[in-house]
Image (cartoon, rainbow, N blue to C red; front, side):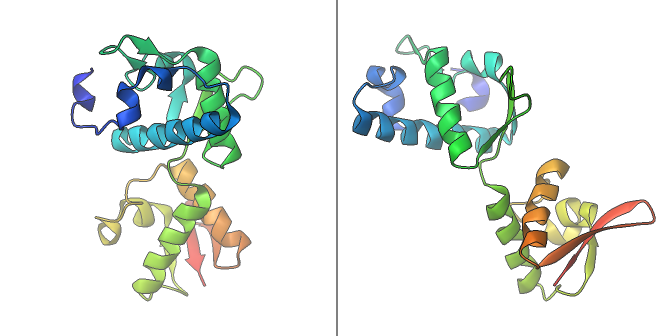
Length: 180
């Protein structure tokens, strides 16, 4: 196992060889894919990673358990990724080649709700924040969204905009958001 993941808490299924073979029974396969999805999201959350190269991740400890000499085959990896996409956690960078994707351990809607809950708890509605202040400012230090990549922050704010809770604005070359 790679050193950077020594402190990662692998689920029990990870030591179970059949976990690495997509199961033919539909009920079993559904539970298996749910377990894989949860594992992928928690693994990437721990690594604080969103951008995924399919070839690289297939050979990573995530899909390749060297201790039990088992590896999820490429069609299995794609089955997991399709399930993540159905649940709103994955977007392909290139839909045709499906070699690179963005995986969000929280959906943009979940991030948006988290940000809005924080804004209302700080009585910051009817104020304007720059995107930098929101994701990297001193006030948001310690919040789960602190350090969120800009593309995902914008997606989260767009969900709030669609709900009428925020407006993304540009001023003097800066991007910001006004919360309602």
